[in-house]
Amino acid sequence: MATSNAYLAAPGTAVTFDAAGTDVVFTLTSLAAGAGRQSAQHDFTDAARPYKYRWRASVKFSTAPVVGERIDYYYKSALTSTTILDNDDGTGDIALSSTDKLRNLHYIGSIIVDEAATGVEMVASGTISIMERFVHIVCHNATADVLSATSTDMSFTLTPISIQGQAT
Image (spheres, rainbow, N blue to C red):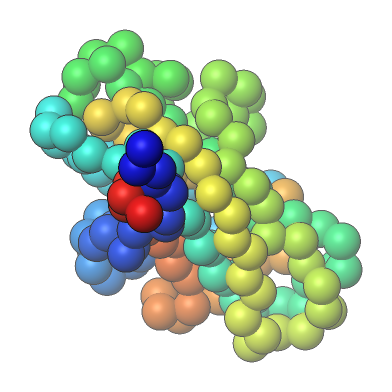
């Protein structure tokens, strides 16, 4: 009897959320302490696709942050491109109207400040499942410091992960 193994397939095409709009516009420049911002909406399309993703987030600060503070990431989903969103802050690359708007979003993970220095790239990564078609990435600056004013200092990337079955 033939057996098979499941392997991690080659990664799919990444979706990058950044100020340049590489794939989706996400403007985190000069994000104030305690403030939040959501990206423009990404449509994964209605076709078959992976639902597991590797995420990688990076930021720099304009002032020295406090070790142990966090930059938190969430995703916001919608039933259609304009209806039944996880909060009512709209669908564009816009400021979060209140931290209460994070309550019904899906937590992704956090960058934990590990060095009290400016100009240092702080990065975190992990894996997440996203079943929804329409999503926004939302960032909340839970630190006492402002993010960098340089647009290329922040990004968020989702890379699809697939499993491939192989007979042995």
